[in-house]
Length: 377
Image (cartoon, rainbow, N blue to C red):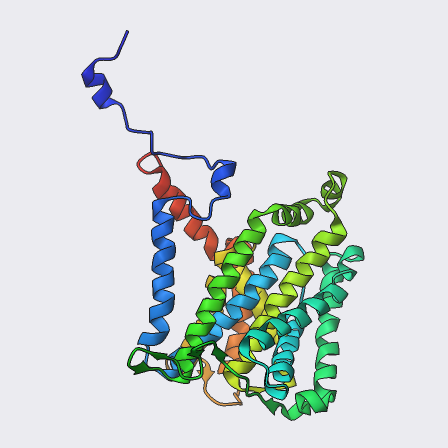
């Protein structure tokens, strides 16, 4: 017996409501028209934002955020997706910076050579360090990676012919990519400054690295990485190679970190060994915790938050109690640098206790709510 027309009109239209995610949907790059529109909007903003901002200070902040986001993507692949805790991420950024110095500045090689060369050198070092993860895990691996920071700083300070010693050295690398010159980009009749051009280059490379990371985690190696993170013995029983997975994660993570370090050197045009210290590694740990461990877009959000918040503290330090500008503080007062260090620790503790999945979890819950609306509660 067929339903009456009134009953048909009363039935809710559920044919477009998908409350479950199918496996084939997870493999799609764009799952819906809204995701396609969102990605298109992000691309447009990424291109227009560097070219529309005129303040060199905030352009420098955005450029640094984009560079750190590339490094955070690499660390999240290693720590968030593979479960290998590393405190030596700063060393791989330093290796990338000095690789850019050697290939780009000393040898005069073009951008299409010195940037991939930095990634290869960083990935090669990751392949050397990676086998230690086969015998170590958890806190033991963290301690070994911590020792890597001090070893790296010792090498950087004493390899004077390359690094210039403790005083650092200038970096001047070619930034031309075919007809595009990212030292002074010209579009039509408009010529943009170096910082605007380099910010655009950084954002383009960030999008490339984000797509690469997203495809890695959605592929078979990515599923193997997550299986090793959750239950490494069970993963090995079902045929996952621990050696290939863990070492491969170190290689990709180190290569991305080296790309970030190379871009940092090209942006600042100066590098010093003290830059690649333990505090920088802790900053990257804070980025993936604040943004969201085990998420790609969380790495990007966390990097920009960690870069932007200290700048806000520095700008409004006169209005913040117990924070003073300068290199010294007395009594209970803190310098801006000390306040930033305290902030990193507080953010890590607060997010680990209150929201272990970071800012990404807030977005995922909000998206799930509107996807199920009006049946969400």
